[in-house]
Image (cartoon, rainbow, N blue to C red; front, top):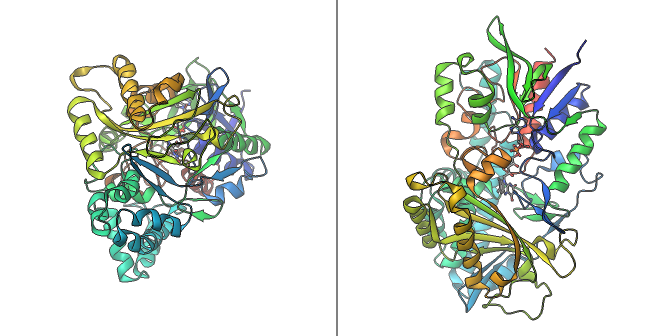
Length: 536
Ligand SMILES: Cc1cc2nc3c(=O)[nH]c(=O)nc-3n(C[C@H](O)[C@H](O)[C@H](O)COP(=O)(O)OP(=O)(O)OC[C@H]3O[C@@H](n4cnc5c(N)ncnc54)[C@H](O)[C@@H]3O)c2cc1C
């Protein structure tokens, strides 16, 4: 008799691990099937050049929910997250820079060099952001009410509405601003100087192939500030050992709870049978032809990947299939990992020798204004990428000596605004090296020793992100964070509650509420809904 599981999780990304751990805690027999040779999905640490390791996709922590950290005992499993000395450093040509973070007073005195008025407005801006983020935080662990659902969904909708009604009118207006406006319009209302607007506005284009002046970018900005590091809200930090340290800790806890984790196990299709009310999932078929049976199947994959490749389309309602086909996946992201022989020396803030200064350990944003970011988007739309791209660089080896040999460093380049599908049918495989040069030259323009310091490079074009990590269209969030694809509408209105049109088939990945980022929240919420439905 072949073993049948209570639940199979397709994909061992961080959300799959979290979901599995919560199910196993309630006594379910659970098996994770992961296509790659390691679990973690887009939250992994890999050696990309002999002796040099880095977080090869996602690279910085803030959104990981404290409840998930606690429930999965991640600290007991060795997870340690350190704060950056400064949140951000923006070199502004050869002569000037802006440092943000290190306390309000420090940031205010930096910003005052550009505008005293902006410096004076900072406390109110931060307070506004915090109060709107609190509204979002309240919704994170909720299952969105399902439009067209039953009485439970109605109560859920009332609960959400009641919370909104309890807010002060000015907070309600701020919520509307951040959810509906462009980040550019919002920031222009608050501030007058370009550098501070660029610093805050950068969050609105991360993983969002859009101009910061496009409606909806305000929400993407908000999505990047709902997190915390070690209890300090809104900041980003570094996991010692890289992002893989998070998922290794999750995998340890899942295994401790009895979850079977199988790597090199690509799922080819979901097994379905006819049931009273349509189709029902009964297990999966692996690419090597093996069948594995379970009472419940949970997908950690991008919804497009699940419904376009693993589920027989004839089993899906026409309208649902059409909506999944139209589900927008395209974040315009280009990601590089570099082995460096020495630290970059920025012309605007010279350092001696190879010892890290605080700005080396911050998020280094090379995009001096919102207009620059907008132009990068326009360029990418017309010709595939911009010659003046948006680059954020992190050098995690300045705070973590487990990543590179002594005296050497690793850098993550997170570059925004390349076209997911290049114009003229050109392949990313052809353009990869040329675009990598543009990114390195961009950094070199600010730190003239940079290019010569690059010993090795790993390049992830949007196509590589899709092939290697399963990020459809290179979309880092498993689907754009646009208003039509959020909350009850993620991924499709009527299926915002982690369930699908197929009985006993659920979703637990970033294509469900509250979307992408290393949060653990979709996995947490999906497990709650699956447990609510019972073992079946
Ligand atoms: C380049 C990049 C940079 C990012 N930077 C950050 C950041 O700094 N901070 C942050 O918080 N977020 C960041 N993100 C977003 C975040 O990493 C993702 O939203 C999140 O990791 C997705 O987690 P997940 O568990 O939902 O899915 P995934 O991590 O995508 O996991 C899905 C898993 O399913 C597996 N799989 C796919 N197909 C199959 C199959 N047929 N059979 C079996 N297994 C399969 C995949 O291999 C993968 O392991 C970034 C993402 C990328 C790509």
